[in-house]
Figure 1: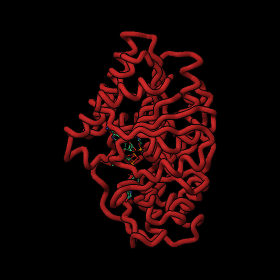
Figure 2 (figure 1 turned 60 degrees about the horizontal axis):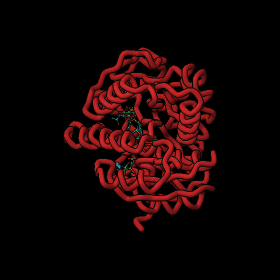
Figure 3 (figure 1 turned 180 degrees about the horizontal axis):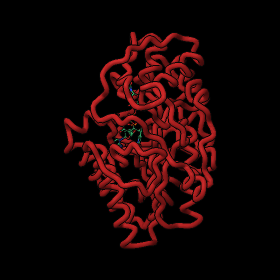
Amino acid sequence: MILVTGGLGYIGSHTCVSLSDAGQDLVILDNLSNSKAAVLERLREICPNVVQFEKGDIRDKATLTRVFNTFKISAVLHFAGLKAVGESNKSPISYYDNNVGGTLCLLEAMTAAAVRTLVFSSSATVYGDCSDVPIPEDNSRSATNPYGRSKLFIEDILADLYASDNQWRIARLRYFNPVGAHESGRIGEDPVGVPANLMPYIAQVAVGHREQLNVFGGDYPTRDGTGLRDYVHVMDLAEGHVAALRGLQRQGGMLTVNLGTGRGTSVLELINAFSLVSQREIPYKIVERRLGDVAQSYAAVGHAEQILGWKAKRQLSDMCADHWRWQIENPDGYPES
Ligand code: NAD
Ligand code: UD1
């Protein structure tokens, strides 16, 4: 059985579907701080295999001990954490507590239970303000905010752990910009409040929840002056986790891998692609740059293909179509239930 921390969140829930499709039984541990119980019902509709759920916090030792004692866990996929950059500037302590402190608690519990296989959700944010694209895994790392620094710290903690005991099998997966939804339209991204990220904002404009999109900067040195990012379909990302787990089971070691498509898409290109698929107009206005944004960021993807045999398959039009299906069928996100 696989333990999925944060498995009711956006990326965790989609990864649960891919793991289940691959024949794995799952237990999700989530404190519902950024997700809803309805996700579990939806997952149980679409997952062919067993999905157990424990409500609890990864910082709670008693909960972790109970989970490891109750289920026969062979590996952990660790998504639980806080992820809002702006909020991390305002509340750095809660970011270090949740992300770094939570990971330490989890690692202690794994050590006690002799479970030594871990897939960790890192981020392209560890490349800091690097604009030299495509970005390879051996690029220098830095952080521009507490959220990013929490990912850097955890990456280093995992490296130290592996250096201390190479029985550990650890994958540090650096996601670029996950978007889209499962093709069933039953699960998807459900941000609380005003979306900070581009794709959910566009989707909310298209569905009529918001009037217009502010495009942050039209004077970047890119082909149309707007920022370029590596948008990757969340189901490709999910399948990347299954590949990483298989890679660890096959060869052990510590893997550090970018998960992206290797292609940069501009803000205006994404607006156009979404508008085409949804047949809706997306009103927008070009405004000042957002503080801390880089002009362009996209992944070097050769390493993922070489060591995991994984490559993103879905196109930008699939990302928009699946995100749109989720948005139109669930205009207010998940029900509270
Ligand atoms: P999310 O907020 O949708 O999911 C995180 C889940 O973890 C939520 O269900 C939340 O309730 C749970 N959680 C948070 N703290 C917890 C705790 N202490 N104990 C138990 N559960 C807890 O986020 P997501 O977009 O699915 O991201 C998952 C992981 O991937 C995060 O670690 C995030 O930093 C990382 N990541 C996300 C992105 C992105 O753009 N979404 C990009 C790079 C990396
Ligand atoms: C975000 C995260 C970053 C994370 C990365 C990958 C923030 C501030 N940063 O950055 O930590 O590593 O995702 O998951 O959340 N844009 C607009 N208008 C909007 C929103 C965004 O024009 O309303 C533009 C941005 O300027 C950028 C692009 O759209 O050029 C993508 O923005 P976003 O979705 O926030 O992703 P990142 O900037 O890559």
